[in-house]
Length: 351
Image (cartoon, rainbow, N blue to C red; front, top):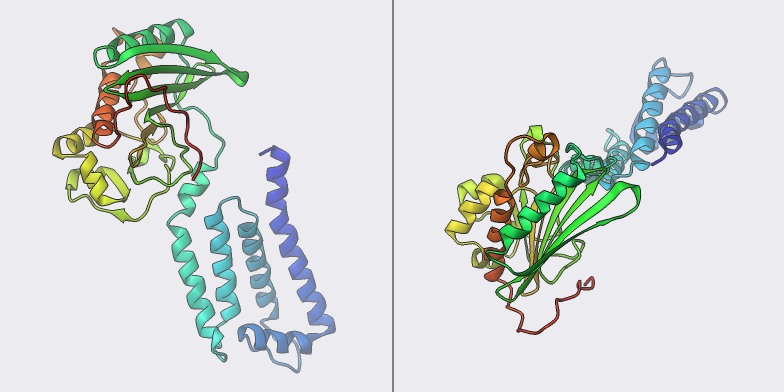
């Protein structure tokens, strides 16, 4: 969003509040009796009908403040924040006189909306912030050498492994490693901007768009110091796996039977120790894992980004290779092997 747009969004609630306050003053001077009756009928605030109530200035200030709040919520980009505004409006319409039946229902409905929105509004607003890399820039020579190490490391498990780095506009570069293991196509993509790593994306089987509902998702709960972990694909309902260590590290949603098909005790323990970000599985189609180093995950997970950036010590690719091998073991329990000779599957269409 351009700076001018942000300033307009900030000024709009102020303009609305001033307009409401000005309208209230005008009505109080010219049509006080009408204003007093409207306040009583609408929200249950009883003003003395004969002469202006001594508390009128306080009421006008409260209404202007409320108008500011509602206008700010209505113009917010996050749907959760807009729901908070709707909830506040319903509470105000309910008033406190409770003379009509709907006066009981409106505040109750408003509180329900606010309680529901409060669960998601923080994550929505943090996710909507301008995306910037939290990792140090890495020189092209060091990065190319690291991708070569990863490629060689994967050859002990994968067949026909190849890597390629492409460059786009705005300093964006993508390093892609593709291969095949036990009849499952694997694609590893690492996005960088101006040399700094943005995200690691691993797809096993068919590539499914993350907007499509998944059969099972596991979303790593980040430590507060690591910031927010961007949301993964949708799935319902939420469930507990029965593994206290795993449930403390991940929020799981979707089909619990399918989850236990994918993860035995050993795989859950390894996932708890090594995975951040989110993992999603679409039954019999594909598995996808994404992590943003430095954003909801440690800076050096699962790649030694600090060592690569500052040239410290001997860099190895074992951590990333182990993560990909773990994902392959999970995928083998839920994705049918592709018959020999079949082409690599194309990305699936949205459902």
